[in-house]
View (cartoon, rainbow, N blue to C red):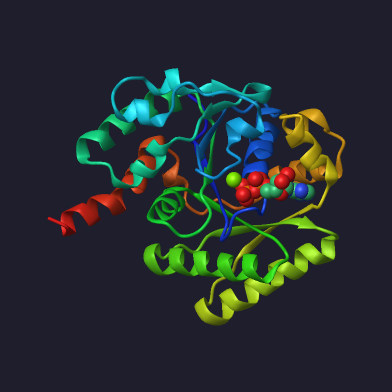
Length: 277
Ligand SMILES: Nc1ncnc2c1ncn2[C@@H]1O[C@H](COP(=O)(O)OP(=O)(O)O)[C@@H](O)[C@H]1O
Ligand SMILES: [Mg+2]
């Protein structure tokens, strides 16, 4: 038996803020602590996890949904031994599974999850139903935000929607690509101020990651920053981020199972399909 599974969803109001980069390196950071990490690529953007790491996925989640592969067959081993479930068009379909498919998926995940300590989900940017489902199913929603008005506004819109639809109270915020600690705090304060003003919501500041040229250099090498340039300031910041997330107080320990994650993930869609008759 291991400790309860922790599910961390990385989300962002808009693309390009560094969500996938942070998801990969956070996964590697946890793996460095001998945690068994599952990294689920639920973002269908251009720079998918497999692209950033130079891994070619032959199979993906759509093969699991079609009953052609087990989840284990779809998984790829990444840096530091992390397990990656690659992105696929099937991910979009995950937000609209029928009962049979849902059960098959829960079963597939349950088998895999027995050995997993941390599940990190790289969700797509924005507020699609798929993003909302993933976020709602996760214990820890980490919003990645940059110091630009669109990123802050879109992050606020995402937080607001999750709060209104699922009464989510628990949001962690990471400021990425900042030029200073002060800038990170400034971005957080802006987001916190409007969240408090309009929703009486207290966000949790997890810290910031500096703008660092080694990030794009590692990407060009198709390697995780933490492996390629472990001494880079952004790499060090990811390690502090890991510490901050670990220390982020757990207010609901009942949520630590993969079945719980998937049931929560699938639930809103069941309701939707019931409504649709
Ligand atoms: N801390 C950082 N410093 C410098 N560049 C960064 C940093 N984080 C991300 N980037 C760069 O920003 C771009 C978008 O990153 P990515 O992780 O693909 O974002 P997203 O998944 O949010 O769309 C990439 O070119 C990446 O190398
Ligand atoms: Mg991405």
